[in-house]
Amino acid sequence: MYRAVAALALAQTVAGLNLVQHNIIYKAASETPTDNDTNQTVITQIEEEFGNDTTLANATDKRLAGKNKGKWAGKNKGKWAGKNKGKLWPGKNKGKWTGKTDLETDSDSVGSWSADAGWTNDAEHSKGKWAAKADSKGKGTWTGEWVAPYNKRQRVECVGPCCQSGQPLAEPPDILIKMFMSDGCSGSTALMEIVEGLHRAANISFANCHARREVLSDLNNSVYDLKTVQGKLSWGPTSLTQQFQMLVENIADHGQTMLLKEQSDYVIKSSKLTDFIVENGKAAIFLRSNLLDLLLCDIKDGIGTSKSYGTCASCGEFRSRGSDQQDKNEKVILDSNRLLLGLNRLSQVQVKRLKWMNHHFPVDDKEGLFAEQDKAQLRQVSYDGQLTYPALTAEDLFEFEHNVTGLESSVKAWKMLMDQIEADVSTNIIRTFLKERANTRDSPKKHHDLIANIEDVQKAFEECIKHYEQAFCDQLNAMLRL
Image 1 (cartoon, rainbow, N blue to C red):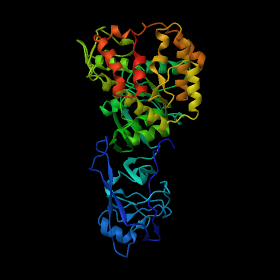
Image 2 (image 1 turned 120 degrees about the vertical axis):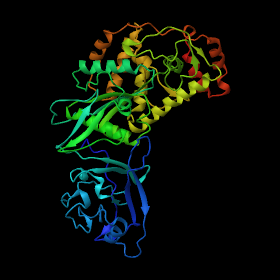
Image 3 (image 1 turned 90 degrees about the vertical axis):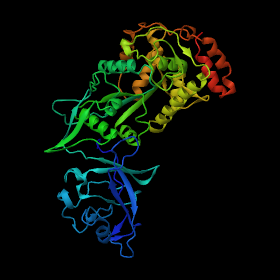
Image 4 (image 1 turned 180 degrees about the vertical axis):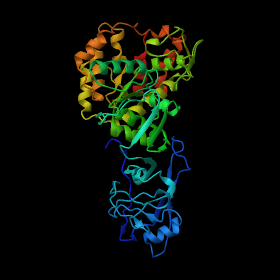
């Protein structure tokens, strides 16, 4: 089911009412934020010793008197252990318990769950799942995030650029999310314009986000208003992950796929966001292989990790993006003393993105793709002299815009990008689409026309080997256009 994020880590616990684990109780501590998601529920572990008589009933009476008076265990075959004897949810929830759990038990998980009766809104909502699973972080680790189950009586009310309206469809698309990961200043806006154009040309539907393609940034900046509604009840998201999940649910309910770009670290820094995207979507990565061009772009726009490594009269003024981009053609004065440091930091940011892709969206025939890139004479992104992931480059994807002989290499690069997200776009469609936009931009300028102190840059590159590995220094020298 596409709405489930992860299975609940349940206790390996009872035979009858005898507690055989280590008397560990997990309780909700919703007032404690964690990670980057504010107001995030954290599950804290409390060890409680009850002596020899360690029945669930006794444990519950001592620890949760006046509250839930009962505890759920994975091996209880769908029964509620404690004073309520499988009849009612305790406290305020007052919903009928069917005796058959819709929760999935992770066989590697250890621990049991208890909480205040007012934790959930109602009985239907309380049949959801706690997002937790056994993984590299530890068996049965609670992520502390509530994920409501799919319920046709529920709907997401959504106000924002990507929100869909009208009657929901019966079935969601096979792929809910298509994400394009990159750096800032790598042509991601122009890339998304072409991605959307190719989808239209191939009659592949997607959600119209009205040119607001940095969805996670918009969610983080409260551009959207989201809430789940069921009958007279409603509840809103408590984290960026939940906001994103609800928005994807709204789009999927209308039979559409979300297209978005990710050039920040929202996904890389959040295991919950990562898990949701891996389960429900596809991702592709493209990088600007010329780090010197990337650094100059950061400086001119006043964004990114490199914005402080140089200056010019108009630097720091955002130049817009895509077809609206404007450039005042001023030369930049680079800080030659920190130049190598800045370029190395850009390199490390790209390495981090490649590692994320390699771990979460691995390529089965990596060597085959490297060979295919080489045959098509595409640039290959390498670090420390090693090819780690067959990432595509912004230079190859946009070669057709300024090079009369670059159309075919761009067609090949775009075909590989579409294949990464499993978009069925033929080579002929890509060629026809790109040909209409070929030779619409000037070739990249020589660096002595972009950098006021180009001699200082050349000297810094010559001294690179004193501070960095040979492979990195060779990479820098190959970037210079003189």
